Length: 155
Image: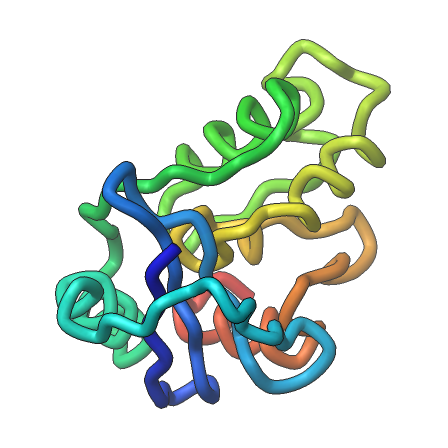
């Protein structure tokens, strides 16, 4: 696995992946921080385009990504992540909305769990999913989720 770390307006970010695509994006400050395994190799040049796209998004210059993604998860998780990719920039959906769209009306909690397991936040925009009566959870914390939604003017 290869990785890159870089500063951003939302704190330090780590992105990692292999030839098949990106598999991790981690906000390195707070509870979601990752200890880089010994067998991972740092390669900033490999991730130049990904870093530039992420920074463009966080600086408000970019609304979509054109990167090869290779998240690892169950079939259900990958279906939820695919649904998250269809939420337009600047919009939100509730966990219940996503459950209904996936034909699993009673699965809002499972949708929340799959969203929380998203290994590529930002790139797979799980911050755009909210609870009916609150922001809901986020791997980078609620303060970061609020900042991302404010960036997209989705609050």
